[in-house]
Structure formats: C-alpha cells, structure tokens
Length: 322
Image (cartoon, rainbow, N blue to C red):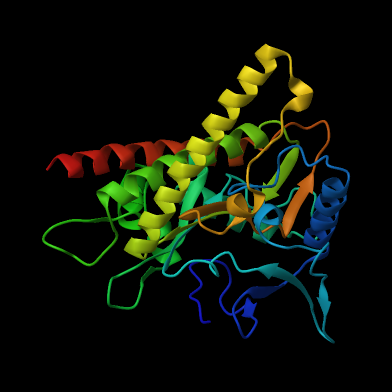
C-alpha cells in the first residue's frame, strides 16, 4: 500500500509491505514519552489521553508495549499502526499545533535554531492562532488524490485560515466537480470532528505537558459510499449509547444496580467503521512538566481549529440550502 506524506520530513517514514504498519525514526525523548504512556496505560492512569476515535497517537496506533522500537545498525525506529489503513480513500489533514517550536530544556538547541523557530511561528499562522496547515490530501473521484503541501499553509495569514479549511473539506455539489463529499455526508462528519476536538481540548487542559512540534492528524473517508456507511454507523452507535444510558437510568431508579448487565456488543463497537479518526502525533520533543500547567499554545490551536470547523459547518449548511 503506497501513501503520500502530507507533512513531516520527506522520506522519513517507512511502510510494511501490506501498509498496515509504519516505521519512523525515534528520538530518545519520544521513546521515553511512549514508555511513560505505556506504563500509565498498564496502571490505567492515562487520564483520558487515549482511546476511542480521539486522543494521542497511542490511543489509536500500537506503540512500544505492542510493537517495540526496532533497532538497525544506524537508527532506532518506532513501529506504529497506519491510521490510513482502514480507509478506502483517505482524506488527510495535518495541523501543526502550538506557538512554540523549540524545546526550552533542550541543551542542544542552538540560539540560531531557536531564533529560526521563533521566526517561523511569528511569520505563519502558528504565532497568533496556535495552528498551521502542514498539508492535506483530498479525494478526487476517478483521479489521484489532490495533495496540498506545507508551502501553502506557510503562505496563509490568520484571516485566510477559513479558506484553507474550505479547501481541505470540499463539498461535492452539482454540477459535479468530483472533489469532496456531498454536504449531507460531510456535515455529520464535521460535527463529530468538532466534538472530538473539544473532547481532546478538555483532556489536555488537565494535563501538564509540553508538545513541541506536535501535530493533530485528521483522517476521514473520501469514498462516498463508505463515508455514508460510516455516518450511519455513527448514528446507530449514538442511538445504542442513548438506549444504554436510558436503561441504566431506569435500573438505577429501580435500585437494581447489580442486575444491570452492559449488553453492548464489544465486537460491533470496535469495528473500524467510523468515517473519521482524529489523533495527536509527533512527540519527538514532548515531555511531561509537573507543576507547570497545560500547554497553552496547543490548547489555543485546538480552540482555533474548533472554531474553523464550526465556520465550515455553517458554510456547508448554506450549500445544502442552495
């Protein structure tokens, strides 16, 4: 399975033959971060940092506790599950998060590099909004995916971010442009992405961490029928959850807690049927910082993205009316 890199350093990611796993060079700090997450997972103390369709990379991809770091004579590689693997025609958006791109505790970070990183944040949307469009890929029906590289995101001003999001989440309209999804399919996906972003924000505001150079990766299905099936799956799952909560509430009122059994079908809920996934990636310069509070730059970026998605939802609704 071949794939296009929409962000990151070119030619740094390797894929297994079947495309299900990826290998990327790992730094000591990144390896330590994954080990901490693996240990926290074992003790069930991740604090909501993983799981479901949103969270850190370890919540959706296998990390050091399942696929160890691979050693070669010249490099260590972190082995991760490919988030695109379960999608037929993956649309991909990579958003660089945060306002600070140098590690203040990295003694190897030269003053020259620090000045370069400060300049990069100041001259792009990162400094003001906490996000930069690193790159994105959109399905073009019957043709190869349309890839937009990081030079585009670097060229944008803060007020131009809505246009970038518009290009990343196009609506398939008549006359057919062969680009994007129909509004009736895209809308529920956008709403769910918005909910996931807010959920991730609520988690990270409680975590004392610094994510320097990390990204938010959003993947959603570009195949129209698969996307429709995924939206239906989300609606059915939400209905099951509401019914479960109603049943639990009635059971609690009857005082028969012990008799209540969670009848949800785990196999059905864990099938890779959701039409999107959202996840934090790239932890080469991430560390926990007890006593120093959350990463305000990353939180700003998540708030900005949530507002941009809200704006796109309003635009897509207008497209439905026309």
